Image (tube, rainbow, N blue to C red; front, side, top):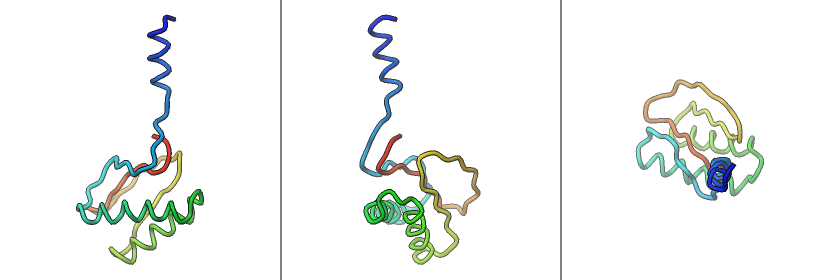
Length: 98
């Protein structure tokens, strides 16, 4: 394998590491989206690597602020199939790998 092919293969296998919220998909209003992203950052700063506490904090805060029910998934590897109310979906990456 020549050097160009090795370099290309190596760059394809690299993970992207970031320390800021990276929004993948959302149908929320701009205000709700901004509030929710700030809430996610705050919860990760507060509870660090305890994903259960992070999810609970985010869910309870969203339930109080925007009404329930909210479903929050926090983790590095998961699959999901969901139904959701219009204008209440956010899928984002934070403090980790993409």
